[in-house]
Image (tube, rainbow, N blue to C red; front, side, top):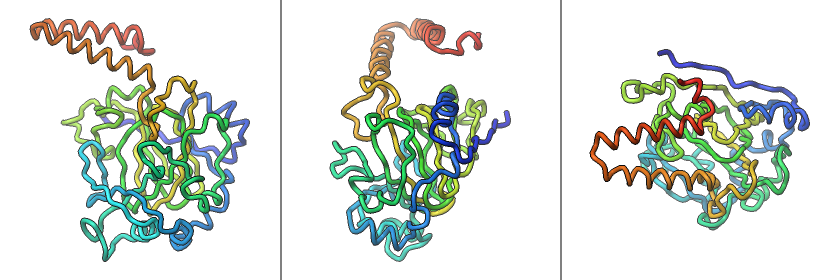
Length: 317
């Protein structure tokens, strides 16, 4: 089956009220073009970033290949002063390196205490933060984090979903974006919140045959573009150029649903965590039965969950 493609909708000069009343309720990704995101697109040259960001130590993903895989960990973690990292990441080849001269770098900025501090560019890179104007598409009380993301040209990041709505503000460089709707989870061969399919452009359909049924939505972010990614939409990012972005997350549901012991903001919602634990106990109970009985009752449980909880259950019958 030929893979299904669609283009991400691009909207120009959308005002706040129009976004919140007409775009946001649709729960679909859009590229917002022509927004005022501040002087960062002009000011953030490599020398300016290095000078203004300073020598603060940052923890990096470093890989000898472009496609970084969080499941198999085909990268290492290393630390560098921010200014040195920016200079290395902006070059395609370096004389100083950890693995080899063409290694790829990726920064997902953390808090000062990664176990407890939520990333906030205003706190951890205050001078650079002053150059960015974040669209006001949520209430201050809903704000969760603002994440600095910087990567080498050619870096491709694993497909995953987030549990919060977010805006990806592309400041420097072009970025290719591929997304899949939440209902395509059946075709993405999940491991936790990440897909095991690393190469979404040339997938191994013998190993992952159901992936052919997934409907991908794709597009390119230009400097100054803002991508709205609704919660649970899967996304895969490729840095066409050396890229710099600011990613802002907010709690769009009631705060009671979110895990308060989650500085990254990527743990499943609390009711979903409880449901997963219940399913794990159910599977453990079925192990007491002979194999043919396990198979029979597992299928009945799957059918019951689909008929009760999946919105498209009737369409699949």
